[in-house]
Length: 298
Image (cartoon, rainbow, N blue to C red):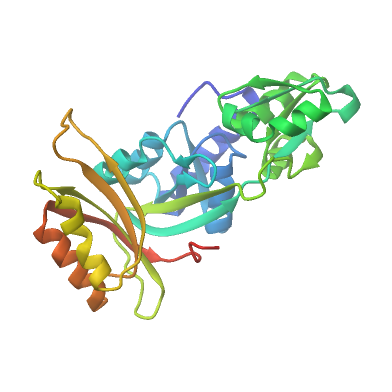
C-alpha cells in the first residue's frame, strides 16, 4: 500500500486493510483511494464484501494472486478515453481469470467545504478535469491537477481551504464530509467505464446465461494471417465486440491481439470459431468467460 495518500484517505486505507486482513476471502481489491470510481464499482458489484484499496493496478492484481483478496475489480476501458493503459499486458500476464464485468456511469461532482461563491480552484485527476472543462470555464474556476479524484477530495477536506474544491464522486463526498455543489458536471453524458472482475479460478456461466469471452492470440507472420484467423467468427455467426493489437518484446513482425466475443466456448458456433482461430495462429489463450452485463449497443 502507498503512503502518499492525503491523511484522511490514509486513515480509511489503514482501516480497510486491517478489515480485509481478518477475512481476505471477502476482500475485493481495487486501484485508487477510497471514494474512487473503482471503489464505487466494488460497492455496486459486491455490496456485502470488503473493499481493499491498492496503490496501482499491479498491486490490486498481486493482492488476488497472493490470496490477500478474493478478487479484484479493474477498469478496462472508458467510453471517452478508450482502453485503460497497459491492461492488454496486465490481464494476460496476471494468470487470473475474468469472471464478471460491470459498467459504471461516471457522474462527476463538484465538491467543497464551503459554497460556490468562495470557490476559486478545483483539484482532480487530469482526465476528470478535462471531462468538466466547459463547466469550469463557465464558473470561472481554475483547474489544478492531482493524481487521483478521490485523493483530491480527501486533500481538500483535510486542508480546510474553502476556496479549493475537488471533482470526484458522490461516494468521495460522503467519505470525506464535503458538500456537493453540483452533480453530473461532466461535459459528455455518456461517460461510462467498464470494469472486469478478476479471480484466481475461472467461473464459467451456466447454460442459458448470455456470456462474453475474452482471449488473446498471436498471428503467424504470413500474408493475410489476421483475415484467415478471424474468418471463423464470421462464418459461424459469432459477434466480435473488441479487437486490439499490440507488440511485445520489441517484435514488429508478429502482432498479438486482445479480443472479446459474445458467447461461450461451450456453444458449438463459438467452439468452431475458436478452433479455426487456433489453426491460423501460434497460440490462443482464453482469459475468461463470464456473464454479459449489458448489450454493447446500449
